[in-house]
Amino acid sequence: MAVVFAGFIVSPTIHIAPSLVALLGAGVLILASRLEKSDYLSHVEWDTLLFMVGLFVMVGALLKTGVIGIVGRLAAHVIGGNPLSATMLILGFSTLASGVIDNVPYVATMTPIVSHLATTMPGQGHHNALWWSLALGGDLGGNLTAVGSTANIVMLGIALRTGNPISFWEFTRKGVLFTALSTAVCALYLWVRYFVLA
Image (cartoon, rainbow, N blue to C red; front, side, top):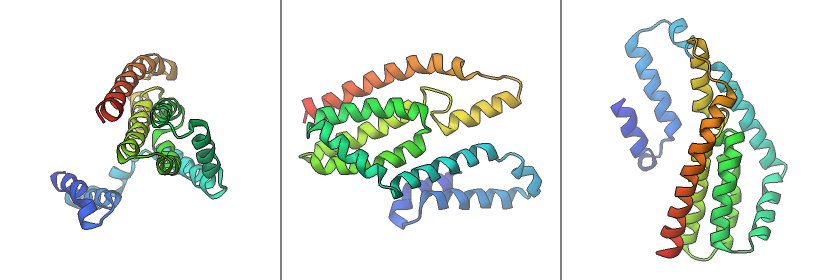
């Protein structure tokens, strides 16, 4: 595990994708444990993997058909070059959207849009604010609903299998409060860090 974490840290320097580091680490653990194939394959979350495959196919289709580009241009027009409005809009929209769409494909979808918006904003500090608003909104939005994060989906599946089911609405009732509070704190931080103290 220590070597895998070290690999994640140095992966940009040694030009190896983090996904490859994770797969190599998993392969070494499988070989070292000498488990039978049926032992470790039975613990793979196949439903979650298929869910993620479907979402990434959808994101790829949106990119290929030009929908992402249209949304990026529309967002730039609505914001009108105002960095503070752009930052807060991305934070708020990302929080809500990634609570309904799994946050990983959502962020993958929004990355080219934020990249387009960043080219319309003056100053490196404002670029950083846009990227941080996407990162924070996408991350915190995953706590909004049970389908907002892959981790939530995996956890609900495990809870169900162990006889401790958590309903979608039970998760969402608690998630809404936590997400609203944490998003408000992030909005305050982004405003102070990139606009008041800039």
